[in-house]
Length: 195
Image (cartoon, rainbow, N blue to C red):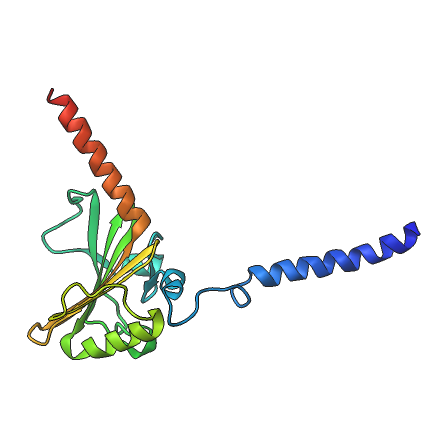
């Protein structure tokens, strides 16, 4: 009886490990269904930039401080960079960007700003609707401004025929909350130190 149990044990262990590995691999796990906000959360960025992550070495080589900003952090302790690539700024799904900027907080990407030519506006909207589903808000019925909002990622798309460029802004909700908490703490300290 004991011999039979030990003979089957390795098979069961191996099978169990294979099942666990498959369930946790990207190909088998639910990474977010295309056409839903879960896909926005799963993608967590665009063009190789990921919200909450650190820029890669290749990306760092292409980053320069945004003109006029220098390496000095803004009021939120963030630094904004412009990305310059040797390659064209082709994004997923045939989308192209005229340029990309990122804003970092403690070296982590909090915002990704994707600028595009105005003639790309409808194409951007069409791709975003396909990828992320129907927008969660449209602040103004008379302007082309669309918002997709999840618990972890926000995406704002804005373009207008009279403007030369449109913009898509990806935002990390967690890092934005951390920035807001830091600002509230600073304000409290400032108010209590003046008393």
